Image (cartoon, rainbow, N blue to C red):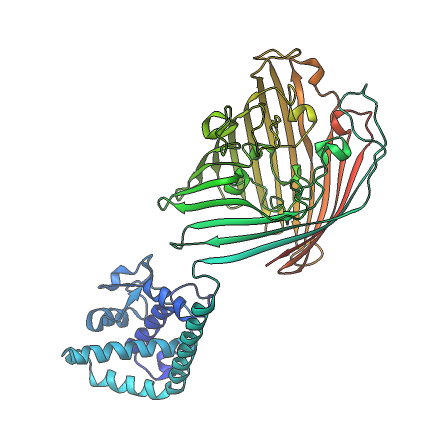
Length: 550
């Protein structure tokens, strides 16, 4: 039979319980976490709460072997502190250093009792035992004090020389080699003459530096700088947006610009608020149900493969996102983004220009299965752009899908949209993630032209399925497959702007984890019947993306 620990160490149950408890007090947190600095030690100690009765511990029962010892410590010495959730965690393992820290805390408490004329609470036997323990653990106590002194000195030095007490720098750099293969440039109308596809191998980069500041510990101010020169594969090169890369941005020729500013904070325990001053993007603020592929730097290689196009409405704008997330299986997010809010010109501004009003209801019946129902009401104007705004064309599907889907009534006809989406993720195991999305959008023309009458309607549909296999070939690697149909116009009152055949999207990638900070992703994107025109030859986009994070 295993002997109780106090018999092995030759100490009383009361003193052992005190030491264990004090060790927990000094090292509050999970058992696997390790204290690395004095500030962390202090912060975790502060998280403990004094108790006056052992019954306040939800995980301590009268039948526990140490119950009487704990009860004695509470009533006689006041040497007990618990976790904020009302637990004691008496079965937690501890090291000799932790034991020494607990013993030291109990010695301080005994000295306090003696100094306050309550020494009659301390028995001679307990004092003798404490003396023996202090002598036995004298080396550990001395070492612990030395480590604390060293950590205090190191903390002081870091605070005196660090970049900022509130801000940290996070970086990402992408190197990309890519090329498009195919015979001809894609055209939407089968009767339109085409030309040979002229494509060369390209090498580009994208660098992002984010300054993340926190003032309360639960808030975050983000200021991001970006420079890039990656060709994004739009219609200017292939004739279709369906070949766009997921990590390509409007080309800056490696000129640095501040491309994102936002601030997020907790309004309460259940409400999170994010204010985007510029370049707001819904997919950064909400769950998009595609965890392995959503990232532009470490996710899918294509723009469409990252997530449903319903999250691209209002991109680049200013606005507010509020997420209500109670402790349960249901959460709700509402958002408003205006993509041309910074200009006071007619047809622009926060409420008189382009906007997207977003709502999403998310269900999490289990850790393995998540599903979301999403609705967006959008308006895309088409007015003369004031100075500083270079592109004011209608973009109904966020730059994904056929050209007819992007601009159902033409690039110069203002369009209102009602968008409906359903997204889901299923993880039958830690190694396998299955996901997908489907969406329907109804477009309404808000202007009249020679070919369009105000009030005319168009229908756009899209869908996709995703498969991610983790640790494929090697721990940390991910094999991914994405198949679907990008936004396609199925019905349109303007007959000349209706897609004919079905175009399909097939994407395969393999994310190779070289280290914690380097990932290499070879990938191949295949577009069958580009622009929903079976007279177009299949287009292939091969990429080799290397992502550095720091």
